[in-house]
Image (cartoon, rainbow, N blue to C red):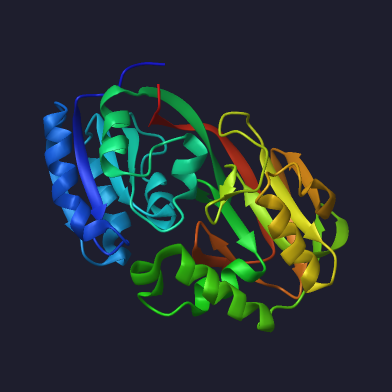
Length: 289
């Protein structure tokens, strides 16, 4: 592992929950820590964030810092794969699951401290049908929530509002049949995990440097079983082990009956069937020392 670069491009999703207020603070704190900002951009429309990151990386900065939620991070990592640019993050979203996975502080000052004094190491990414993602994809109620959550709810009410909306969507949710590499089971929810956290809760026992992807299914047909599994995860992923089935490896073909949408770090981007795999040591990232 090596020390982080001292020059960076900064791109912040100004529509993330903390984005507008965080941009100026991030610029000031980074400069106070001796980080030279070759460029700094606040993106008002999240749809333009990937293009802004792509343009920043095209300038070959030693490091690119992306501020936003899990969706912002996942939509950005594609543009760092295969480059010499180090990736760093400021967690500005609702759940900040990838930051939790890596142990990055959730406050701006703490995250900037990691960028200034942390270490650079290679980490794995997940890949679904050629699309890289950072932390976790999901099938089941998570895409249903992501497709229907009212605009601005997460920004103004944060995790409590998001959880309340999730409870409401449970009334529309239906179990499904899941097939992983030819084996079929009844499922209530599926996580395709590179990281340990999903929705801000620790759900999967894994690491971002172990060269494997984890397909974790909450098994059964009764919605109460899903609620029970969620409750057990509050005590830790090992407590919910009896409610889930896990497949661990480098690549899996995943099918569902009926075909279902997949949310990738909170954004609905594809539908089953898909190929999911791990991309070992895909990018170099700044993590806590």
